[in-house]
Image 1 (cartoon, rainbow, N blue to C red):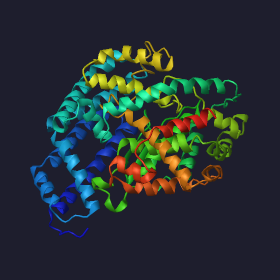
Image 2 (image 1 turned 30 degrees about the vertical axis):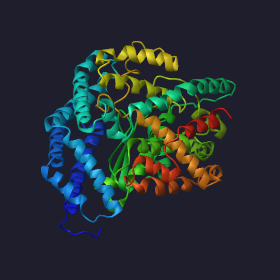
Image 3 (image 1 turned 45 degrees about the vertical axis):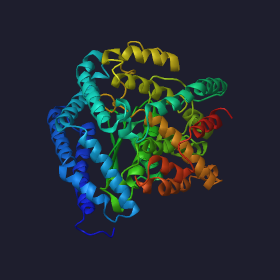
Amino acid sequence: MNIASNSAYVALTATYQRLHRFEHLGSIAGWDQAANMPPGGNPARAAALAELAGLLHRMRTDPELARQIEAAEGEPLDDLERANLREIRRDWRAANALPEDLVQRRTLARSRCEHAWRTQRPANDWVGFLGNFREVLDLSRETAERLSDATGLAPYDALVDQYEPGMTGAELDRIFGDLRGWLPGLIRTARERQATEPVVQPVGPFPVAAQRALCERVMRALGFDFERGRLDVSTHPFCGGVPEDVRITTRFDAADFLKSLMGTIHETGHARYEQNLPRDLLGQPVAAARSMAIHESQSLAFEMQLGRHPGFAAWLAPFLAEAFGAQPAFEPANLHRLMTRVEPGYIRVDADEATYPAHVMLRYEIERALIGRELEAEDIPAAWDQRMATLLDIDTRGNFRDGPLQDVHWPEGLFGYFPCYSLGAMYAAQWFAAIRRATPDLDARIAAGDFAPVFDWLGANVWRQGSRWTTAELARRASGGPLDPAHFRAHLETRYLH
């Protein structure tokens, strides 16, 4: 950067560095709230986080920032600085669309709802959940409408745009409409084929201490930096913290080691992205992850493309025998069959990659209708039951715990996020198609435990790019074109039908 030290642009970067440091504290407080905090601490923690949200909002809406942004536009910035200024302006516009009172009320409501959800879900207490959730929904609608007024987007599109800039409901309808056309047939055919394959089930129990040691061993093999991150336990697995201190969580089940292992691999993909964002620009918006679909493409590249690869199963098998004792289920071919079973189920995070998009489409359709005021909170169970029956032929009536209470996203007001999961799966397939073109012997390298071609490609083409490019431009530079769902279909057909 060669511009004068007293320029408007330099002043903006100083403000965003301060924002990053405050957000660092907020993210660690949020991680602690989910992973360590005693239940009685929630009211005070919620109030503290709301106070911090108000402070950050005041910094983002300071009128001086508007003057600095306009002045910086006329300064002699290089391309990277202009990309950072573009992201600063985007952040400024979003912040100024919302009043501070709404930001604080929303933070408090989300904290109350999420904290109560932790006990309401296992109790199957939908009625109790509604008491807090109605407020979260009302505030999310107000947020959507204010963002809509500021951006000109439809209210739900304005929420999606927070996570996936440039994506719209119309484009999602096109993508998911195409999926609905061919995915049910693929699921049906895959299940028919797998019905003829013998599968030996693992014999537990699988001690939690051994599972944790296994997860950490695999995380190290996948390049996770334990000097700048850690693994913990929470009700719902997530990746949080900051690039300098990444916190990931998982959950353990003594009867099923694959849930924690694959969940940990998924979160490790998120963590590697965060740990490898542009180090010299951390604190600036241009050094942040590009979008949530791109973020999910990293976790799904790790979990689905790499983690369920037959070569990865062969590499993993000896570690399972060390952790839990040798048994027939850990034979590599059998292990791969276990990892790639296509079986419709209740739980999104446990779903195989073929049925997973159905879970996303269900949530997308419901939350879009909620924000559009076509459905109310009380209508969710009926809408859920109808779609689960249609998409996956599963009866969820009366099962709120494994139905609309299973995810943390709606209690936390994260409307507009769910589509990013399936978009991420599509990008992940597109990345691996490009990696295969660059490394023709990729499958053999993975089988040999050499994952460097994957990490090197992702590092160069995604991780270290941060938000320098728009999502479409990032995809074009990385893989030769914008998002193309055909890669996802080809991947599923290759793995499950051929």
